Image: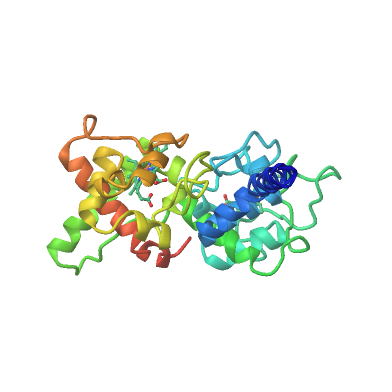
Length: 285
Ligand code: HEC
Ligand code: HEC
């Protein structure tokens, strides 16, 4: 009799300890079962945050505040194509980040020797990050700048067949629409990986690249379903996946009732183009 009671107490204690372990290590176990996938540009976004870039250039690089004494009067944006006004070639972007200025100084103004707060010609000075960046972080920042720059735009050469030109035009329409509808606010710039999403399988809104995308979108039919219905039947038929889709904090909107068929076509072409990764080969600037 006594031994049975002891046994029961023993098992209750063991169960309680196990439950505690799952509680404590839950997120670790979850990320082992469902490993997160990070894009190089998303890694760059993290580096940017850790280096304080948004403090001056705005949250998504959308531009800063007044900068008395500077050429433009404001801290420049990193998005919306503005990078091109400051950097004509990829090397210039590296120089801006490493040394806080362009070494050739073609812009005419003398940017050398500026130290914030010590008689500098402008109130706010771009820092020189060379001493602070670890191996690989510069490339990650450049990839991030590429994704937010607004310069990696679909373009067909004049010699391309008509069919390709028409497709490119639809991708371009899709890109404009995606900016307006906030697709990149949730899925990350150019779909390079999105924001945190409590209750989701991986903990974040997936991007349009790599393994996450391959698992969630098997073909263009599913791609269209995601955009028009906010889910795909393959996942809704699976009770576990369905529960996650229905209970996660951020949910994919269903655009069916709000967009024309051609607009959904353009978004499908756009996401397929982004997922093919060909946009990354385009030069920035
Ligand atoms: C203390 C404020 C500040 C911080 C922090 C800062 N910048 Fe800048 N940045 C500037 C200013 C000001 C300029 C314009 C330089 C001028 O007017 O001489 C600039 C210029 C640039 C340029 C060239 C202009 C353009 O729009 O293309 C790039 C690229 C750039 N910064 C990237 C970054 C990155 C990446 C980070 C983080 C690693 C960063 N900046 C952090 C203030 C800042
Ligand atoms: C409010 C945030 C939000 C917005 C805005 C949003 N989505 Fe989503 N999207 C999600 C979530 C959440 C999922 C579900 C992913 C999952 O299973 O966890 C998703 C899934 C997807 C998927 C499936 C695969 C994948 O890797 O992402 C595609 C494709 C997609 N969205 C495209 C778009 C497009 C195109 C737009 C703009 C027209 C858009 N989304 C706008 C949150 C959003």
